[in-house]
Image (tube, rainbow, N blue to C red; front, side, top):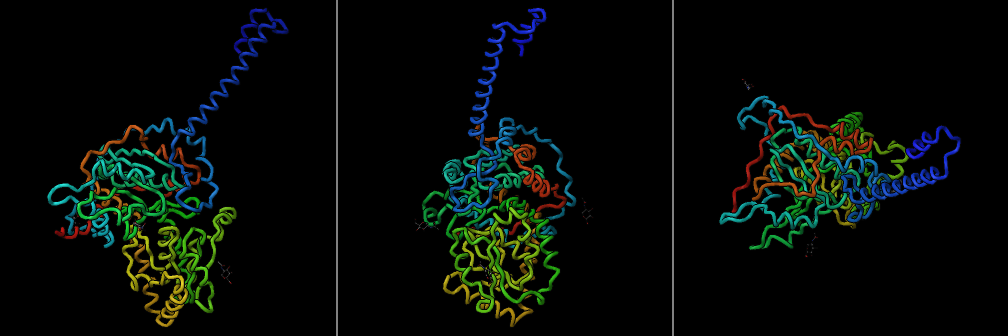
Length: 488
Ligand SMILES: *[C@@H]1O[C@H](CO)[C@@H](O)[C@H](O)[C@H]1NC(C)=O
Ligand SMILES: *[C@@H]1O[C@H](CO)[C@@H](O)[C@H](O)[C@H]1NC(C)=O
Ligand SMILES: *[C@@H]1O[C@H](CO)[C@@H](O)[C@H](O)[C@H]1NC(C)=O
């Protein structure tokens, strides 16, 4: 362009540019192509180096039915946002005056399952003779298993993420979002922490490999669930802020809609059998065994396959959870690990039949057999009989069975987002109290803030994030149950 323009003027309006000008413009055009090629590969290069919170790493889970995250992260979003994940310096807003800083005695007590925080963190409790605590070395040891390191600094106002591998679907995005919402809900109250988080399903810190007398404490690793045989620290999973890939709304909205749907049919008028609908293809022996119980006459159970691929294509018309409260009994079966479906099942107010769970998430420790659910045998050969017996018992004792369902639903009502944030706050506060070093983001970490996450999100994710945004709390957080006495 430039070459042609100057050539034209110098020649006083000649119709055809001289050969030299043509050569020059050919060279210019060619270099433009070169520049484009170079730019393009720089673009690809930047993409492959750009670690984003949009996941596509599938290795640790054996299934992955959703097209969205199958390829690479949406490229444009990653490139647009990543190099300049600039977060504005946090406003140092004054803390909203606590509505009423009454004495702890008058404040709300946390639900009983908050006591599990003490148990989960017990391996790092400071030891009477010195030692214990979360050290830098332990954190480094946890890194091997972590998908990201999360650092909160600046008096609970800044959040950095160092990403080791991308998580499936929206997990990492919404988990980081959940922490930002916690910071928004409790401005300046989230402690400065440095922690390792893994977003895959199964716990990784095996109890039998750590914790013998005289051993150093196990590596501290946060994830969505644990078991009695593991030291992983459970943290609320992403689905409380929504699960875009299955169209399951943030918990506040989803609970309200399930409760409304459930209200349409009183317990006594519901179908007097057990119901389960889910994805059996998740390498879960429980779910495979459950398929065999699909016989309402013999086992009183209706077991349906949920094909999320089909559902996604048909606009999620047949997977609405609010329309799945038509049975008196609802079966819960763990998947590859814990399943986020537990809270939706309990929300129905149907009598929950839990196939003896092995995995625990942060709130499931508040459930009590025969109080808020009926236990069902996990042994493949006994499962169907066990379901039948529970259903027969319930239909013979309808008032009691209905109460079990009501208590389960009540627990879910109490599991409001306020409780979820309080759990996060208390867990992080107790954990921070055990750290023996000052949190500092590593130089490879990126600051994450609401704007940068919104920029990375696709339209649907963005809608879920907006719908699950927190407001600053007007109440004080609930009061933690006291720690158990220190044993000798
Ligand atoms: C707290 O509540 C008590 C009783 O409701 C009231 O008398 C008091 O003025 C309140 N304090 C503040 C700081 O709002
Ligand atoms: C924990 O480790 C032991 C010994 O290495 C092994 O036998 C056991 O299967 C492991 N448990 C889990 C839950 O991975
Ligand atoms: C269970 O049985 C019903 C009724 O026979 C059938 O429609 C359904 O497909 C069965 N479920 C599975 C998972 O095969």
